[in-house]
Length: 227
Ligand SMILES: [Zn+2]
Ligand SMILES: [Zn+2]
Ligand SMILES: [Zn+2]
Ligand SMILES: [Zn+2]
Image 1 (tube, helix red, strand yellow):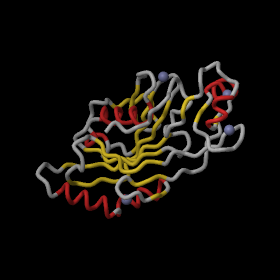
Image 2 (cartoon, rainbow, N blue to C red):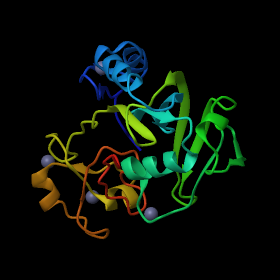
Image 3 (spheres, rainbow, N blue to C red):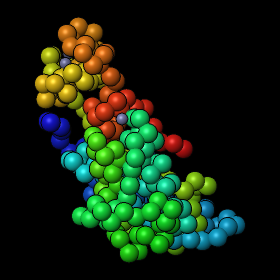
């Protein structure tokens, strides 16, 4: 399925734009992030190991997230996060495994601090039918206090990839599921052609959202972080 060129992303703390690899470097040095970390470390509370994770769509690198995960949080929190921001369509099963070893499932009750020091890259699978694969890689760690009360903080995310209407070339905002499912065409459409496009076997075109699950199973967004 034709997808798109390398997408840039945006730092949550300062708005800096960078590619996927550039963002890891930026986050390590971002002054706004450093200020938030220092503020968190100055408060009461217990230090723990925090993991800088990069999650990316395993089919093409346009969709990616830089996350900071607390060592005391379990993989189920990461599963929940990925479902909310990218994946959830119909409550399918999911699992984590060691990269390259599908059958070596890692229980979602396990804590990040027990898993990541041993396995620096994990594969997350959502839906064993129309499968979405997310590669999780450890980019770095720090000892300190978390910057939020949640298990995971969103540090950066790819920008919504831009696509052009297959009928006229204007910016697209909709996807025809019949094009995808029956004609093997990434059928993205502008507002105007979403109304006049003839395919209706899979219902109305769905709105494009910033998720690698777009066009798969019954996925229709909203691709928003859970917190
Ligand atoms: Zn920044
Ligand atoms: Zn589904
Ligand atoms: Zn159009
Ligand atoms: Zn179509």
